[in-house]
Length: 310
Image 1 (cartoon, rainbow, N blue to C red):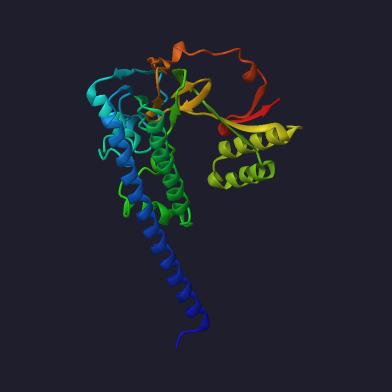
Image 2 (tube, helix red, strand yellow):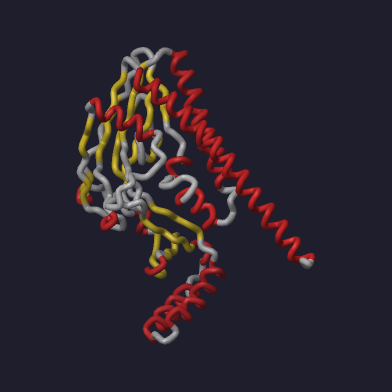
């Protein structure tokens, strides 16, 4: 005879299994509708009689180079008919390349745009479909995050239920712009800046000594880092600052937009934006700016990218 505790555990496990089954079913329904609505948008874009487009091919990132910070990236501007089809597919591509040579960790970026000229009513109909796609993306993400166990969620979304799915591509909104005036494609380095929970950091540093307890050099280094941290008087100004890899972005009427994939331009009448294509990236050509921001920060712990910002 089962104990009461075992019975409760069995009931909890059954309830969890039912919950996961329900979530899988919801994900399937949302994803099927996402694909169907995306296909409707693709058909409209393909059949648009007046369209222009450019794809900026950056090449694929191999597994060997996925952690590299390149000093140069060549851009191949493609405005062929095949480029139009690639752009349309890429906007709605949710699965990986499937070739083991290429990285699944690094983002395979394909910046570009497709511009279609339509009447006002046609534009509103297309916007309605695009917003439906974006709503379905948000619903898919919300349902996926209901799976609290990260390993289980990864297994469902990447290994079994949706083999090769790139969740970021599903979650990311489709960018579209109605009658923009100016678009400049550029390269940008972005910094990730996070506030520091000092008590947590101090605890983390103390615990890190145990990682290499027999390594005297390691112990001395961590002790020195703890002393450097404690020597800071205005700890509320401590920040973790990390540079991300250079990435293509577009400045659309003054607003910066990431460009991991192409976006859609909706134009009516004689509206035609001025578009500056993406140039080759060369590290030596990048502007360094005034250095004012960097001069207002002091490195505290290099290993942790920990800075004091004034």
